[in-house]
Length: 431
Image (cartoon, rainbow, N blue to C red):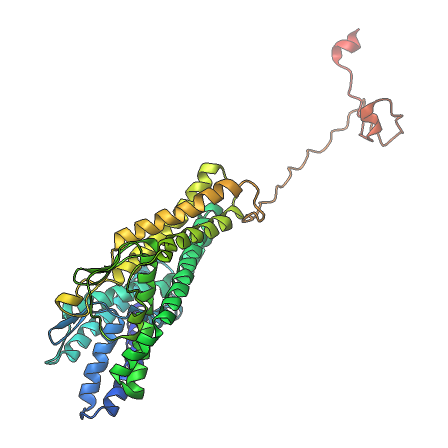
């Protein structure tokens, strides 16, 4: 084992952790500077470490309140840094084999998990508590997925290109379904936020956060945006979203339990009741399935059952993505009343799968026979080398056609085919 494998992985993880800590500590430092309470570098380091763990999706406890419904949109900061660090480590270590890459990734995971454990110990105060074991495990998982992707990205891309054309269509159609779902939920959330804009302004005014506090709220809003889009997808598919103890929102069931939510501007987009127009929201998910079905039907030429299988598999990929997003969008932001918030993950994924299949399968069955664009991956064809013909053996009775002109007397003769007169057999000679 070369030391370069271990050193490159460890340095990459250390670099990603330090840059991430500095990035998330800047708004924390600005908040402490503009606050009336005096604070030193120790307090800034403690608060910055806690913010870095929150960006890595580690739950935090402030006083008696446990926050597990975290702004997992901030997870993009450590993920991007770890992917870049993984690419750098794979380049400088020259890891080629599977075992060498595993050593690079393992060293990075260990170092990043130890830094997560250290950050949980540094950030612990009388009012802030972070579970050290949970911190180490969560940061290890984040490093394994993101850093590992950076190291193995070329191998993953090569294996993806080696897939059969049908499987490539399945994966690309699944990605298209995810993109369409994000687009649909973004438009719906924007419309809901515009409707509830006066309430959002009242919440912003009541917080009176000031310029720096407004910047922090903006960053939190960006971090919580993926969670709100996930809630929107689940709500549009017909799944109920829990917003408090015994209080749910659903396009089909009116919410009769009053709930006081935290004064966070994005929460102004939550619907206060149900209407007839909201009953048609699942149709939008079906429409997303129709678009996916059209895309598939233009790229594959397969029998009917296989086309339906491609559409179902692509819908399944999108449903798995919704399941993971819903799991990350569930949690608590308080005690009792604000515990277990979010949509039902399994129900949301099942409903999205069913609606996408309802939209995509009939389309591929109806329009898959004559695609406008055939998705074909050309494979190199090995050149066929013709075997050399054996040298002709001269025979006194063989007369070559090029020695004298032969008058065409048959259909074969008229095609300028060379005519060779074969020697007579021995029996003929005896006769």
